[in-house]
Image 1 (cartoon, rainbow, N blue to C red):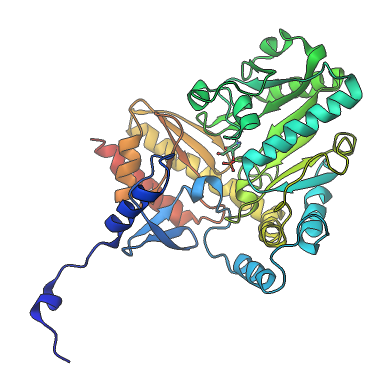
Image 2 (spheres, rainbow, N blue to C red; image 1 turned 90 degrees about the vertical axis):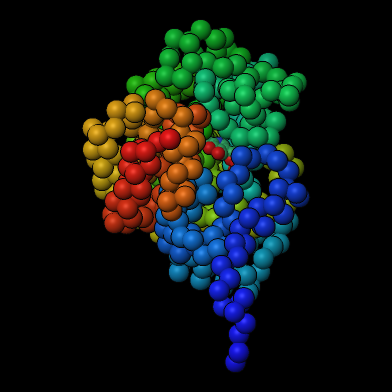
Length: 410
Ligand SMILES: Cc1ncc(COP(=O)(O)O)c(C=O)c1O
């Protein structure tokens, strides 16, 4: 076969730039999306449309808990796809029952409600808490206490619980009766009128707010206060839950449990799902018709989550997450010794934040160009959220790329 010289010597055409242009024209501009178009993934690596590989330490913002194309996960979803994709909550389906059974079996919770995202899980938690408070303590008991610097999602209830004005600007009026108290300050909580407080909502590790784990004493004080005043304690474990902290539920790190836990992200390993789990006395405040979701508990989503949970909840898997966390922290601390721009390293498990005294955006962009995906948390914190299945070699490779970016930050 004869080929023209022009074909033989032409440079490979980048498909990425053209896809980015197309995306910019038709997608709403809600994210500062990087000009990277991902098309495939395997383990801890993803690949863009031009074939460039990246180590994925973003995991789609703490979602791809088993990495990409985990064989058991692919098998479970494929098998379910060939059986039944959807049936609504007018009927039961087996994967949703099995998932609820697994989630309550080794936890402090008794019942599950499934939905489709983190924000939706927060909506469910807030509604359940207000319903319970209304039934048990009367209708004036509607206040929700939320923590400074928190993030709970973008829908109206979740946004009203999010105590950061940058997310709320332009959307007022918000849902009434949310009061912000200071994270890790019990006096700030005690200064409110607890007789009218229905619930307290808190992230055990604040993610978007800069990767700040809650203080162990404060969270125990909150638990005691909630018990004393019949206040519902809600943990938002949407980012830090499902093994990311090194324990299946992040609350296990603090030796206490909330009344309601909200989950999403890593629960589905890439398939959209959210959930709330609650203790029986609170869960029983819901009756048929009180809350719902057409897609909630969908057999595809729950079989994906079941595949993730069955892998993650084993002692061996969680202990490996802890070991890899220790290794990543130790390697980052070595970096801190060399680069004074690193002010702090904090977090739990494989949800770690590196705070710099310089803006992180250029560093994150440099890392992406060098083949490492990272996420920011505000202007000065880099978040490392690798798949929970990440290897020691991949940790070393990622930190090496980060080091090269820090060595030449401009
Ligand atoms: C702690 C926390 N809560 C809630 C949400 C909202 O989840 P989603 O984006 O799935 O609605 C997020 C998302 O980043 C989160 O990190």
